[in-house]
View 1 (tube, helix red, strand yellow):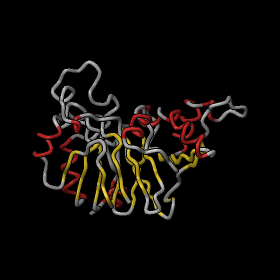
View 2 (spheres, rainbow, N blue to C red; view 1 turned 60 degrees about the vertical axis):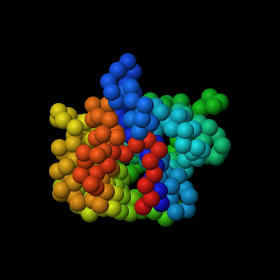
View 3 (cartoon, rainbow, N blue to C red; view 1 turned 180 degrees about the vertical axis):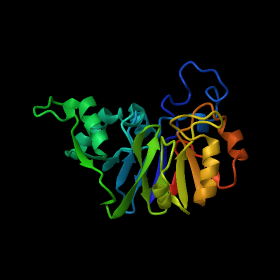
Length: 254
């Protein structure tokens, strides 16, 4: 299986509109970050997308991806769901509704934001989605997927574990019971919005270093990174040996 980072940035992306900081004006492609999303390719070559934000169309085109079999949603914030309408070409080509796996709250929000996708009498060209409520572990294409419930400020959101890899974005706290799912993984992917200054809804580097000591992953990749973290090339060298800043287009085999 592989995981490809389609986006590793925060809700504003990098560069931030109008910002002249060294990160936003960097020429290094690794400092250009779309909104956070990943594509899992299974052993059977099925495509599982996690989150579908406002950069979805560009992410698919730039990565030469042309198919999604299933979408998993971590939560309902716009930087993770507002690209759903751009799934229309994939839906039309497959001639089937796009399966979406999420919790009940997120499903209700999707119906509110995209009511035309669920109308009894749809207008021509509308997308169509098939909602599946996550109620525990589930299996897709022969792969067991284990939801990991974390807190994003005051709302519970999902991360997802596949084999010895877990992907968690938009978290500020991981309950002790869920940490048991994350110990001694080969790959742990966590959000880290910046190096300093505590954030109410996201981990900062201090939190990541503590989780690294506690969970002991072989490799820990950072995503959902803001322009406040610093330049990829410089900051990556300062991290512990097993911690890495992820970048758009990066692929992990697991």
